[in-house]
Length: 321
Image (cartoon, rainbow, N blue to C red):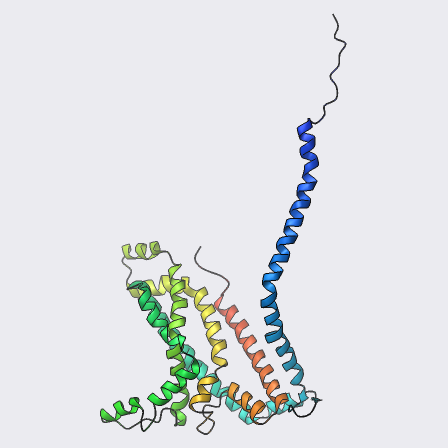
């Protein structure tokens, strides 16, 4: 007996064919859905992007252009090329203002970083009370102008409660904001008082990311608190500390309002920081082109310092593996 029938060529089942036909449609549906998500994302990003262009990008580009012109708001801008930058290099007040700003930055960053790190470690190791963290942050909720005015009254040479206490202790009154030697350190410490709580909370958040197992293992090995701080806390906190330093350095170079309400650049230009000199050149003497040139120079300096800090502190890397 012979078998005459032969098996027909294999074909996809009906369900498989339908599934195969539906795949391109699903792909097209996914593409349409992704396109809809992209449009929705663009709607949400648009306000922030518009604010960035209007309030940051355009003023920056406009300032760069004005730095090459002579402009006083009353007449059209006149192109003068590099004259403003040549004037800036030969301006002794500019270099004095830059030096005063650097003095302020060193005092502010040094004291603020050490104090904030100490507060953050104490909050981490002794207590984690939310109420205490709120108290630490309270000065930061006050504006720089209000903080400056309050400390101006407290440190007044004749009527300030600070000098009243000093006088009651038998010491001579100290002209904190009226003496060339005391003015910049006093302004720096006023801003340290206002910002140290915020900086401490940033560092406290970084400390929260360090596993407690490392401290427990170090205690088992007999390590002291001081040794654990230098061997565990500081290396693992380095990325957060680097970012905090970058932020505080940029903010310190932009100090203006505390100086404006306390000393107005005096006495004898002892507190004439760069931002205040730029403001005076633009809105006091209407030299907007020259003020723009100094602003561009400050932007370049801050960019270079930020890049250098980022490289030296290895802010993009962590030892927590």
